[in-house]
Length: 67
Image (cartoon, rainbow, N blue to C red; front, side, top):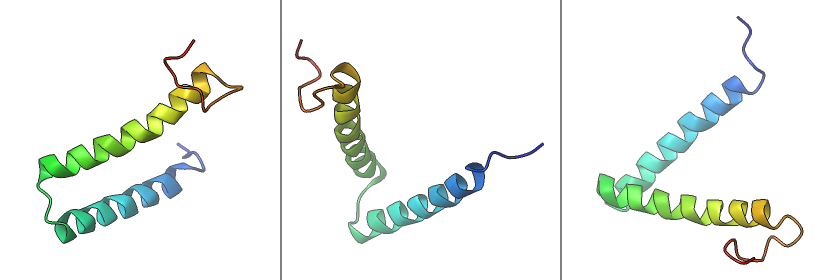
């Protein structure tokens, strides 16, 4: 089986991100729940703009809930 060209770079990035997140969690003395909350807030920020772009491709600054 041949791997897709993006598989290994994505796996390496995933490892680097996990390592960085572990370091940040330790540096800021965050519990697992606190860390998850931080990550969820970041995901919400990213997906907010993705949803705006999907619903209003010609005006991504327009809020997703606007008609």
